Image (cartoon, rainbow over all chains, first blue to last red; front, side):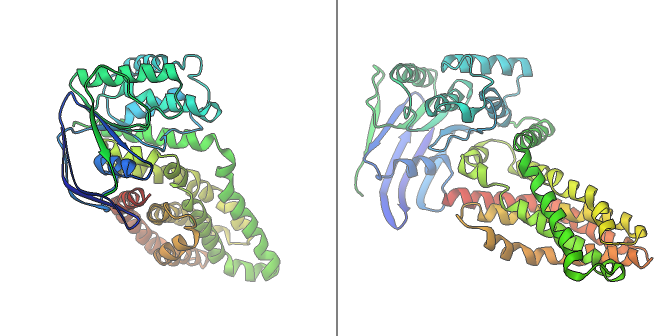
Length: 199
Length: 229
């Protein structure tokens, strides 16, 4: 699903990764570990295709679409959670009808415990709640490949448990997840761990 | 991946831009207020002689409209860059051409179009002869659209910079010059009782070219900016 070969990643004149290779196939849950500044975020951005000029080597994705969740939320503070998610669905071209889409969004918001906040402007929500709106995309995304940068940041403990369950469901139905986290991932599902050190 | 039908996507994109703008109504008023203030200053600076004002009016109106558009263009992608909307936009399977076009279209609907609509009012303040009003409005209608498209290229390229304001002016103003020349030329011709058709046709040509090509340049600019961000 994702094949990285001979990747050399550089940022701000610092060599982060040297001759890095990675192969991710369907059903795999990959956890990228490393200290702050070890290049986790840069690696995920490169994998997503957002940073194309700071690396050499090849990154091939067989999956046509992917879900990328970065440090920047991509949410609009002036829109409600419902409007934000509706845009997400529209721009990712699920061609269901409007009713189906609304039902999906309701379900996703319920899944991240935001019932009752659907029509509050996002900038009036707490940081954790905004994070949850962002994570609701996981429930709406048909993308087989998920690239998640610190998905647990600002999420409370029960939220993390639900989130891990969602990640496992994704890999069990044939998707793949590549994620970074400083928290321990508690699941019975086998995890491929990759540690980024000083290159 | 088979994309969604393109027209619904374009309209969804446009509706979102307009909705966001209407939730920040003060920013819509900004360019208009700027236009009003500067136009008001000219009679004070030049003197109230109607003949002299009428002579300068086409140039004044066009320069002020140009600067108002430039002012608004600078912040076109800024918020979306900072909150990560652009990142997500680049990852959608939708053609970036359309998203960029919708950004520009929304920008024009909120700056160029209102400027065009209020311009006759300001023209009267500056003693522009009434027969020149249709040429003024038509030239602004076509010209501000070109300005929005070209200005957005600069905005896309400089969005990653902390202080892009001066740089965008340096980048973009040379490309604004032809629009200014033909735009104010149209009004001057009409004010003298001639037909403004040649200038308006040139502006129309510029607009067609800009619509066809500018969104590609904007898309490339956004990719570069997000890449470096």
